[in-house]
Image (cartoon, rainbow, N blue to C red):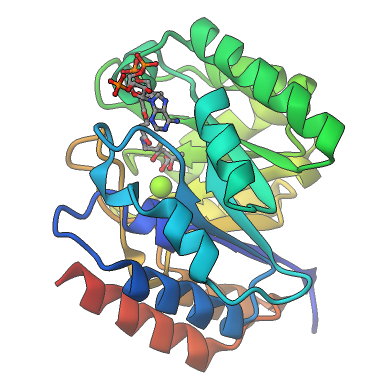
Length: 284
Ligand code: HMG
Ligand code: MG
């Protein structure tokens, strides 16, 4: 029996690769994005227009955007922390951008050198300009359960940042369990608080499988109404400013899980497996 649509938002080319220390050729990143297009995604996060001093692996983002083969109906997205990154992203022809905030002060400082309040000030002109140009903006909230610097994060803190980003115009809020500490119970508590301020249909679960809980956290989220989940093929990734937090949940495993439950993802599992092998090989 079909349980209806459930979308996987692929973040592998950005979140998956950003922490890799070995230099990955632009051509390899482009080949991965093209393979993901073939797999049937509607949204693919390909790049990040951040300081190359902070995240060297994302330095060639403009070249990646220029060389991918675009398919109609697919949105190719990139991260932008400030107006500088936003302007570079526009010049590179991205279809959608993402701003990335945090529910914890410690992570916000380490990740973008700004407090939570300062980060929202950086995002405001980006959202304002994007609204005039009709460019969709996604909002990330990192550390929705635990912060590598500040420890346990209260659900109310997550709800507050999610609420602010949504009010500023983000069309969807992606909730990042950056350290993978979340369990079905703590994820449900967090989602119940966030759902009070942002409808479940505008939320995405961005779960890391660091402790093996990601799939159970997806199940808990499904029962609370979420139908969008972020994944990275091959389970690549983590965050350069969250030490010891590798492993976005693997897209190919999420797709298998969701389709076995009866959800329709529109993705081709065999092409996903090929993309996962490519991603793993890029890790070296
Ligand atoms: P800063 O040092 O405070 O910035 O960094 P600044 O404004 O003082 O500028 C310093 C230099 O960076 C200047 O260059 C600027 O021009 C340049 P210089 O004069 O020294 O030559 N600069 C830029 N260059 C390129 N692109 C830009 C840009 N902005 C300034 N956009 C800044 C502040 C935000 C730039 C920095 O902290 C940064 O780039 N941080 C990004 C960190 C990052 O990408 N982290 C990973 C993504 S978040 C994540 O992974 C979590 C998530 O996936 C969810 C999850 O997994 O849980 C979303
Ligand atoms: Mg991640």
